[in-house]
Length: 338
Image (tube, rainbow, N blue to C red; front, top):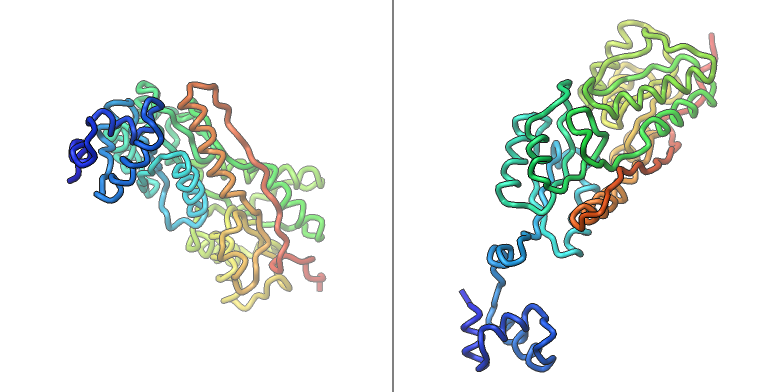
């Protein structure tokens, strides 16, 4: 391993001069800096980040906890955070919670033990009002930004999210304007605040149109393709006469659409399907999905900007970004009554 004193011996200067040159200190001439940096590169010198961290009391590391990188919603957000962090000289440690509180706690503790400069967390939602690990983060005063809606157990932290209620409201309005009155809704996880906001957007649009929420048109699902398939089969078994389905996410919508197509229904001639999220598959599905485009890259960039404010000791406010309705082929006017 090449050390500072090896470079100093080769070039005939002190170790302190080499150290200052590599840190761009102002009291070393430009010519000397250039010679030292060129030699350091030729010799393959790699700075000891742990030693630098002891000196500066920073690690230049961020910890990022998400459910899973296989979730297409997070791929673009993670990419944005990593890109912006890289530009700022930070590296990213990634952990998967798999939506399990104990796994989430393990990831966070590991990152805290690495003395990360900040945490980005997509919370594992639970019904409890408190979670011990989040109390520990507060006690340590580790800068933390939530990716998604805050819940009671993590309400003390700033969050970056989209206008969930407004976006869902716009989806329902789209279906109402097409002439649908029997709109089934496939809900998301019961513990997730964002799922409740999306349902409230659906409910608000119906009420403004003079329609009540029909409990027979509301089906509990989760957030996976399998969840959407199961909810669609339940809807068919219960014969609720829906002319459209509004799903809490694109994955649920895709599962629903697959089930309906397999039963011989046509989309959108027999029934319309709309999703939420605009994952890559939604635009390339057999019937391209009408959905909500989430600004995933901008969410990641905003999260890093909030983190840097926190690191500088500045006040940090939560941010909500607008989302856009994308009309595709899966939604159309309801079929004429026989």
